Length: 214
Image (cartoon, rainbow, N blue to C red; front, side):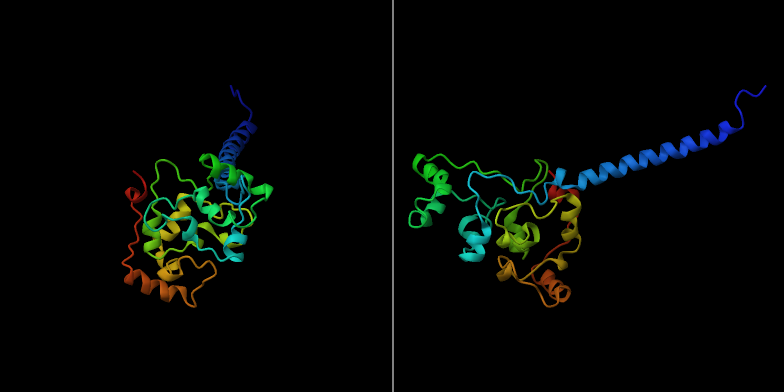
């Protein structure tokens, strides 16, 4: 006695194919979500206690990155400038600007400004600014054209896959050490120059997990 009609075979096959397609589609959605700014925070400008403009200070006034980020060449952390650094200038200019009152109050009280940090790696990832700077990786490679940002945002996804692009092919990104802080600099022939600098700076293409993960 036949319990199921012949059409049940077609229904069963369609349900299997449909189920597999649904699982694949859900996997694709999760992948896209993982790469989206909602997760990576790419392109998101966080609200800060004071709306600091890199465009004004870097492009407009010509202040070098190292004036504020003092430990970028010697430490894993580039450093967030203390209010005393801000007040070196703002004791003389814009002294009554309402927007800068949090800076003045922090300077008077000695209580640090609680900036919202944009570029943050997970606890299981080690990143050292000093070694990247020493090997000729420019600020713009990771932080984008900060000199054009009125409000600072994370320009890149900061994902492992994004980092590995450089680790696998450093010749595509390395630049002369004296151009590390030059946001607008571009090589005439990056491939040729990069290959030369990789040898000169003894850069190794390191992709082993232990390089970045404890």
